[in-house]
Length: 130
Image 1 (cartoon, rainbow, N blue to C red):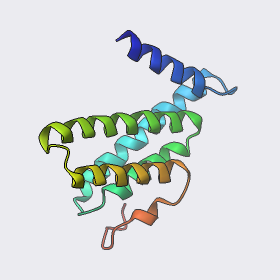
Image 2: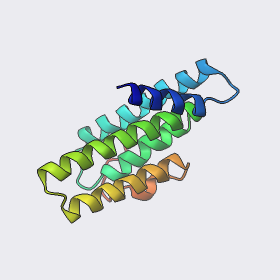
Image 3: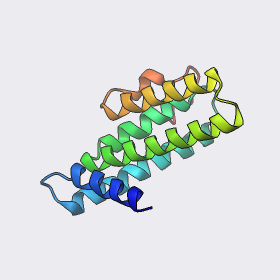
Image 4: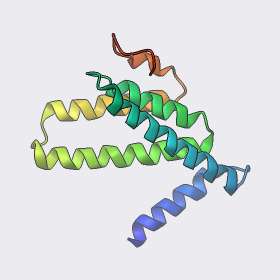
């Protein structure tokens, strides 16, 4: 637990710019909200093969908030990646299709965080609402 706390604290210190702690935490909370919104839109859309678009959209929106949003997007995306990899290892026996899916989702998240247009991953026939 101490190691985890130390890692989180160090990553916070490294991520805070001269703008100050308040704006960094505000951006981080708003970025986490953007990722949650994208996740709920993914569930609500119920559109096949749309997960990469929503992962890219959530990371893009979070990154637009500033350094705190980028930090939150990285931390949440890494946690989801590690958790999903852990579950895939024990449930599906580390299958190639699950690993390929994880890697493609990770590329979509990085695409969105870099500021590139998330519509690159938009599926055909997806409702314009999203």
